[in-house]
Amino acid sequence: MTKYKLEIEYIGTKYSGWQIQDDSPSVQGAIQNAIFKFCGENTECYSAGRTDAGVHAIRMPAHIELSKEYDPYKILMATNFHLQQSNEDISILNVEKVHDDFHARFSCKKRYYIYKILNRPTRPIIDNQRVWWVYHPLDTELMDKVAQNLVGKHDFSSFRASECQAKSPIKTLDEISVKRNGDLIEISLNAKSFLHHQVRNIVGTLEMVGRHKLTEQQFIDILEAKDRTKAGPTAPACGLYFEKAEY
Image (cartoon, rainbow, N blue to C red; front, side, top):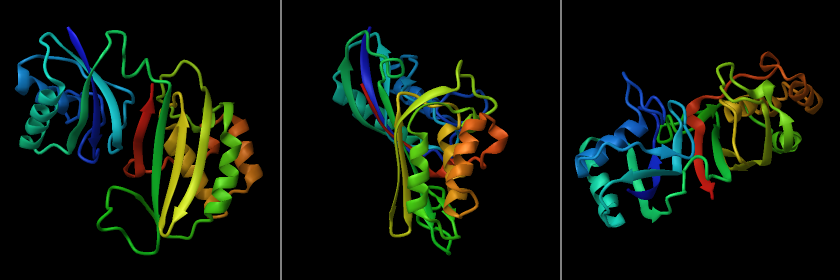
Protein backbone atom coordinates (compact mmCIF):
# COMPACT_ATOMS: atom_id res chain seq x y z
CA MET A 1 0.00 0.00 0.00
CA THR A 2 1.14 3.54 -0.78
CA LYS A 3 -0.03 6.41 1.39
CA TYR A 4 -0.76 9.87 -0.01
CA LYS A 5 -1.43 13.16 1.72
CA LEU A 6 -4.09 15.37 0.13
CA GLU A 7 -4.82 19.05 0.74
CA ILE A 8 -8.44 19.91 0.04
CA GLU A 9 -10.49 23.05 -0.47
CA TYR A 10 -14.27 22.95 -0.24
CA ILE A 11 -17.43 24.94 0.28
CA GLY A 12 -19.49 22.98 2.78
CA THR A 13 -22.90 24.52 2.10
CA LYS A 14 -24.49 21.53 0.36
CA TYR A 15 -22.78 18.83 2.41
CA SER A 16 -23.83 17.16 5.65
CA GLY A 17 -20.26 17.66 6.85
CA TRP A 18 -16.96 15.90 6.28
CA GLN A 19 -17.97 12.47 7.51
CA ILE A 20 -19.74 10.09 5.14
CA GLN A 21 -23.48 9.69 5.69
CA ASP A 22 -25.93 7.05 4.47
CA ASP A 23 -28.63 9.42 3.27
CA SER A 24 -26.98 12.78 2.55
CA PRO A 25 -23.95 14.09 0.61
CA SER A 26 -20.65 14.44 2.45
CA VAL A 27 -17.20 15.76 1.56
CA GLN A 28 -15.54 12.45 2.43
CA GLY A 29 -18.06 10.50 0.35
CA ALA A 30 -17.59 12.74 -2.69
CA ILE A 31 -13.79 12.40 -2.57
CA GLN A 32 -13.87 8.63 -2.08
CA ASN A 33 -16.30 8.31 -4.98
CA ALA A 34 -14.04 10.40 -7.25
CA ILE A 35 -11.01 8.28 -6.33
CA PHE A 36 -12.96 5.09 -7.07
CA LYS A 37 -13.92 6.44 -10.51
CA PHE A 38 -10.25 7.20 -11.17
CA CYS A 39 -8.62 3.94 -10.08
CA GLY A 40 -11.35 1.48 -9.11
CA GLU A 41 -10.21 1.27 -5.48
CA ASN A 42 -12.41 1.69 -2.42
CA THR A 43 -10.29 3.71 0.01
CA GLU A 44 -11.13 5.62 3.18
CA CYS A 45 -10.10 9.27 3.20
CA TYR A 46 -9.09 10.45 6.69
CA SER A 47 -9.01 14.20 7.41
CA ALA A 48 -7.40 16.43 10.04
CA GLY A 49 -10.82 17.76 11.04
CA ARG A 50 -14.37 16.43 10.82
CA THR A 51 -16.15 19.63 9.85
CA ASP A 52 -19.90 19.95 10.46
CA ALA A 53 -22.64 20.55 7.91
CA GLY A 54 -22.17 23.90 6.19
CA VAL A 55 -18.59 24.45 7.38
CA HIS A 56 -15.92 25.21 4.75
CA ALA A 57 -12.20 24.42 4.37
CA ILE A 58 -9.39 26.48 2.90
CA ARG A 59 -6.71 23.79 3.14
CA MET A 60 -7.86 20.59 4.82
CA PRO A 61 -5.18 17.86 5.07
CA ALA A 62 -6.27 14.27 4.53
CA HIS A 63 -4.73 10.95 3.58
CA ILE A 64 -5.59 7.86 1.54
CA GLU A 65 -3.93 4.51 0.88
CA LEU A 66 -3.90 2.84 -2.53
CA SER A 67 -2.67 -0.64 -3.41
CA LYS A 68 -1.11 0.59 -6.65
CA GLU A 69 1.52 3.35 -6.73
CA TYR A 70 0.59 6.40 -8.80
CA ASP A 71 2.27 9.65 -9.71
CA PRO A 72 0.78 12.16 -7.21
CA TYR A 73 0.07 14.58 -10.06
CA LYS A 74 -2.06 11.94 -11.79
CA ILE A 75 -4.09 11.44 -8.60
CA LEU A 76 -4.49 15.21 -8.31
CA MET A 77 -5.73 15.77 -11.83
CA ALA A 78 -7.85 12.62 -12.16
CA THR A 79 -9.61 13.10 -8.82
CA ASN A 80 -10.33 16.75 -9.60
CA PHE A 81 -11.68 15.75 -13.00
CA HIS A 82 -14.24 13.41 -11.46
CA LEU A 83 -15.14 15.93 -8.72
CA GLN A 84 -15.79 18.52 -11.42
CA GLN A 85 -17.81 16.07 -13.51
CA SER A 86 -20.02 15.42 -10.48
CA ASN A 87 -20.45 19.17 -9.81
CA GLU A 88 -18.89 18.90 -6.38
CA ASP A 89 -17.81 22.06 -4.53
CA ILE A 90 -14.48 20.42 -3.74
CA SER A 91 -10.98 20.79 -5.17
CA ILE A 92 -7.83 18.84 -4.36
CA LEU A 93 -5.03 21.40 -4.09
CA ASN A 94 -2.05 19.08 -3.66
CA VAL A 95 -1.14 15.39 -3.46
CA GLU A 96 2.14 13.95 -2.17
CA LYS A 97 3.47 10.59 -1.01
CA VAL A 98 4.00 10.27 2.75
CA HIS A 99 5.48 7.72 5.14
CA ASP A 100 3.38 4.84 6.37
CA ASP A 101 3.22 6.29 9.90
CA PHE A 102 1.58 9.54 8.76
CA HIS A 103 -2.05 10.01 9.81
CA ALA A 104 -3.94 13.17 8.85
CA ARG A 105 -5.85 13.21 12.13
CA PHE A 106 -3.58 11.65 14.74
CA SER A 107 -0.28 13.12 13.48
CA CYS A 108 -1.70 16.67 13.55
CA LYS A 109 -0.01 19.01 16.05
CA LYS A 110 -2.16 22.09 15.58
CA ARG A 111 -5.39 23.08 13.85
CA TYR A 112 -6.30 26.58 12.66
CA TYR A 113 -9.82 27.92 12.19
CA ILE A 114 -11.19 31.25 10.95
CA TYR A 115 -14.71 32.50 11.61
CA LYS A 116 -15.97 35.28 9.31
CA ILE A 117 -18.63 37.83 10.27
CA LEU A 118 -19.98 40.36 7.81
CA ASN A 119 -20.89 43.33 10.00
CA ARG A 120 -23.01 45.79 8.04
CA PRO A 121 -26.69 46.82 7.81
CA THR A 122 -27.29 45.19 4.42
CA ARG A 123 -27.38 41.44 3.75
CA PRO A 124 -24.62 39.69 1.77
CA ILE A 125 -25.14 38.56 -1.81
CA ILE A 126 -21.70 37.53 -3.09
CA ASP A 127 -20.76 36.13 0.33
CA ASN A 128 -24.13 34.55 1.07
CA GLN A 129 -23.62 31.29 2.99
CA ARG A 130 -19.91 32.17 3.33
CA VAL A 131 -20.20 34.51 6.35
CA TRP A 132 -22.42 35.18 9.36
CA TRP A 133 -24.29 38.39 8.62
CA VAL A 134 -24.63 40.53 11.75
CA TYR A 135 -26.36 43.83 11.01
CA HIS A 136 -25.96 45.58 14.37
CA PRO A 137 -22.56 47.22 15.07
CA LEU A 138 -19.95 45.12 16.87
CA ASP A 139 -17.15 46.42 19.09
CA THR A 140 -14.29 44.31 17.73
CA GLU A 141 -11.64 45.84 20.00
CA LEU A 142 -13.65 44.76 23.04
CA MET A 143 -14.28 41.33 21.53
CA ASP A 144 -10.55 40.81 21.00
CA LYS A 145 -9.70 41.97 24.54
CA VAL A 146 -12.30 39.72 26.16
CA ALA A 147 -11.36 36.75 23.97
CA GLN A 148 -7.85 36.66 25.45
CA ASN A 149 -9.37 35.20 28.64
CA LEU A 150 -9.77 31.95 26.69
CA VAL A 151 -6.07 31.52 25.91
CA GLY A 152 -4.44 28.70 27.81
CA LYS A 153 -5.68 25.49 29.42
CA HIS A 154 -9.32 25.59 30.55
CA ASP A 155 -12.39 23.50 31.11
CA PHE A 156 -14.42 24.58 28.04
CA SER A 157 -17.69 22.91 29.11
CA SER A 158 -19.55 26.23 28.66
CA PHE A 159 -18.61 26.16 24.97
CA ARG A 160 -19.07 22.44 24.37
CA ALA A 161 -21.99 20.92 22.43
CA SER A 162 -24.16 18.51 24.38
CA GLU A 163 -23.48 15.78 21.79
CA CYS A 164 -19.69 16.20 22.03
CA GLN A 165 -17.99 12.80 22.38
CA ALA A 166 -14.61 14.03 23.65
CA LYS A 167 -13.48 12.28 26.83
CA SER A 168 -12.59 15.55 28.54
CA PRO A 169 -13.79 19.18 28.22
CA ILE A 170 -10.29 20.42 29.07
CA LYS A 171 -8.48 21.92 26.08
CA THR A 172 -5.61 24.34 25.54
CA LEU A 173 -6.32 27.28 23.23
CA ASP A 174 -3.00 28.57 21.90
CA GLU A 175 -4.20 31.78 20.25
CA ILE A 176 -7.34 33.75 19.45
CA SER A 177 -7.70 37.12 17.74
CA VAL A 178 -10.57 39.31 16.53
CA LYS A 179 -9.68 41.63 13.66
CA ARG A 180 -11.76 43.93 11.49
CA ASN A 181 -11.09 44.85 7.85
CA GLY A 182 -13.87 47.17 6.77
CA ASP A 183 -17.15 45.31 7.18
CA LEU A 184 -15.44 41.92 7.55
CA ILE A 185 -14.55 40.61 11.01
CA GLU A 186 -12.29 37.56 11.23
CA ILE A 187 -11.94 35.56 14.43
CA SER A 188 -8.85 33.32 14.23
CA LEU A 189 -8.19 30.45 16.64
CA ASN A 190 -5.61 27.69 16.85
CA ALA A 191 -5.09 24.73 19.16
CA LYS A 192 -4.08 21.10 18.99
CA SER A 193 -7.73 20.09 19.06
CA PHE A 194 -11.21 21.48 19.67
CA LEU A 195 -14.44 20.27 21.22
CA HIS A 196 -17.57 19.82 19.12
CA HIS A 197 -19.00 23.28 18.30
CA GLN A 198 -16.37 24.92 20.55
CA VAL A 199 -15.41 27.57 17.99
CA ARG A 200 -18.99 28.39 17.02
CA ASN A 201 -20.11 28.60 20.65
CA ILE A 202 -17.21 30.92 21.48
CA VAL A 203 -18.05 33.12 18.50
CA GLY A 204 -21.74 33.25 19.44
CA THR A 205 -20.81 34.42 22.93
CA LEU A 206 -18.22 36.94 21.69
CA GLU A 207 -20.88 38.41 19.39
CA MET A 208 -22.87 39.24 22.52
CA VAL A 209 -19.77 40.96 23.92
CA GLY A 210 -19.47 42.95 20.71
CA ARG A 211 -23.07 44.15 21.11
CA HIS A 212 -22.31 45.15 24.72
CA LYS A 213 -24.77 42.52 25.96
CA LEU A 214 -22.04 40.89 28.06
CA THR A 215 -19.24 42.48 30.06
CA GLU A 216 -15.75 41.02 30.32
CA GLN A 217 -16.48 39.80 33.84
CA GLN A 218 -19.71 38.14 32.71
CA PHE A 219 -17.76 36.40 29.94
CA ILE A 220 -15.20 35.15 32.48
CA ASP A 221 -18.06 33.98 34.71
CA ILE A 222 -19.48 32.00 31.77
CA LEU A 223 -16.14 30.26 31.19
CA GLU A 224 -15.79 29.45 34.89
CA ALA A 225 -19.39 28.22 35.17
CA LYS A 226 -18.56 25.17 33.02
CA ASP A 227 -22.20 25.16 31.95
CA ARG A 228 -23.27 25.34 28.29
CA THR A 229 -26.61 26.95 29.20
CA LYS A 230 -24.79 30.03 30.54
CA ALA A 231 -23.04 30.88 27.26
CA GLY A 232 -24.34 32.51 24.09
CA PRO A 233 -25.91 30.85 21.05
CA THR A 234 -24.06 28.67 18.57
CA ALA A 235 -22.89 30.83 15.66
CA PRO A 236 -24.05 29.65 12.20
CA ALA A 237 -21.91 27.07 10.41
CA CYS A 238 -21.67 29.20 7.25
CA GLY A 239 -19.05 31.54 8.76
CA LEU A 240 -16.60 28.83 9.86
CA TYR A 241 -13.54 27.77 7.85
CA PHE A 242 -10.92 25.13 8.62
CA GLU A 243 -7.84 27.11 7.60
CA LYS A 244 -4.87 24.75 7.87
CA ALA A 245 -3.04 22.24 10.04
CA GLU A 246 0.52 21.76 11.31
CA TYR A 247 2.39 18.44 11.48
